[in-house]
Length: 471
Image (cartoon, rainbow, N blue to C red; front, side, top):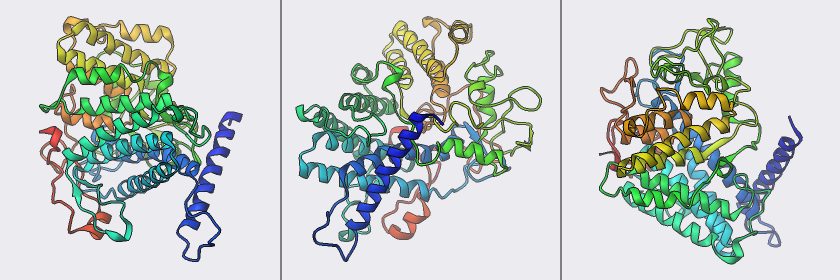
């Protein structure tokens, strides 16, 4: 472990310990009247910037089976076959962070700290948009009233979408205030190290993602997407991500668990065939940076729903491997990236009929992601000039853009949004074996914890029901 990594973990642990200690005082009935009545705002900043990114993993740990990034080694597993699952842990963790974001904004408002207000608004929008894209209607407007309302109503998906866009605008405005620059504690901000300008770029990137998300609706406006992108990221250096953890990157934990036969992190046959040359006739140089070859010297995945063969002591299929790009102790957990922005640009330009601009952005998205993963320049050039990828602007299709975005957004929940709004139109993408549903999955059922505590307000849904932007 290098010195920078050790330093980041020391700072991370110190901030979290400080926050937790203060929160204990905050809820202590026998409170010392001379003690602080609220947790320190920098401790909250440390928690929300870390945990918001961790929640992307928590949600992705479910959705990556629906996008067939991952597959279960157990035949007929519930998550592989669209059977009912209980994602209470992800739901609760998202609401825990939202509660801390609510508190951080409240304390920041009382102290006149615009940068903290802005970060709270931006991350609140990101978290709410992520969970409503998984579950649909969710509690928000009545969620943070404590004992005044322990059974919050569920807000409508569309109204929450509008709320999130408004929160992003508020966040941008707060961070643009003269006193916001330099206000954030850089050692407590695990996403952008206290850089207000970087947070503004992230807010515009998230707005572009949300505006792009509604491509099946009359609300879609390609020009609005492109306008946000001009104010968002300009390189991989801008990406919203964390690299410091209280322990290790959770994808590394899954890879390690698998290596000691706590089976986890198996790669789907679809993802492998999309990158090993089977579907597109070109080998993707990112694949060796993600996993190792099997005992047969090739790359093979696990068919979703069918179960796996062998195990790490007899590697007949591919898994997330300890030490690879996504599954090392210092691997980033990515919220949104420059590469994703370039693919959004390609899609928006394509929908406008600007084929040349769309093609340039499509190639730029592939290149940016490969550069970030450390692919050699010669391998990048070989890939982007090969006939399967270098189709030319006149032959570019939306499907081809989305297929390349699929690889670039590996293990990110945004891919499930993309798949649903394009009706799973990816070459050779099929239902998992033994699927409970006769159609592709469109949402999760509400978690058991919410049903048990707030059942009177929980909507009745089916996992085949489409969300409002997926009609």
